Length: 247
Image (cartoon, rainbow, N blue to C red; front, side, top):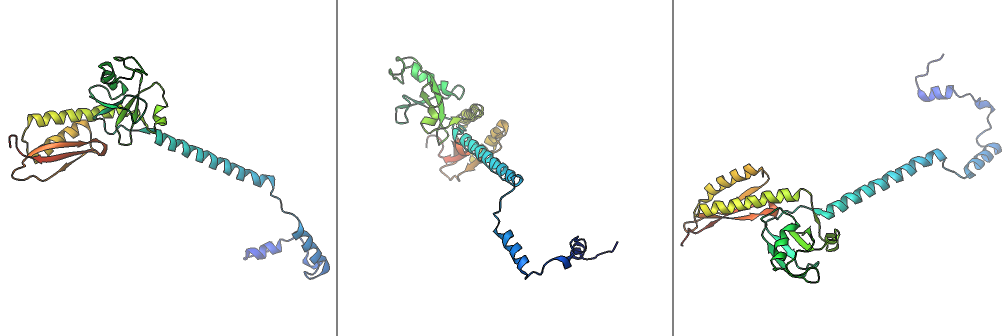
């Protein structure tokens, strides 16, 4: 068998057709054959159509999955500011609101007491002194807003989100942190900014809130005591210098 170093030379050598039997390229027969071939309609073989159909199906499934993820992102939100709870008198963002004390679990039942005490009354929903069915939603600011309703879709109707399942536990931790800070500063009426920072960092470490930060403002001769502000949505504790008690 002859060896051919050039691939095209090997391909030509394996051609079973004798070139001497073919008509000249400029002959009438060659031109007629060329015209016949180029005038035929081109159809895609059935085997070639299936991959494209499968590709369209894959793209459609991917778009649907992205849509579901986007919907979930819009529907659920963390209660990032659990310090206060807004209890609404009606299923409207324009109705009267009463702030509930978040002493219990971070959920809609926190508003039961303001209804039972008569602080909120809506006799179109329930008689005075009774708590109606309550649904908790999350505002854009991360607050828990509670409405008198048993409709599970009320949050979506009001353009609000639903609390993520982990929000109640996380909210309880932040509220406990807030209570600890209030107690700490009530026991240390004139703590220095630096000492307050060290003590509060220990509190954060104890709760495992490693993502939280402490921001300090500089003091002065007349403002050498520390106070605090809690920015729950942004995970920040502000230490603010204030004058000593009695000044």
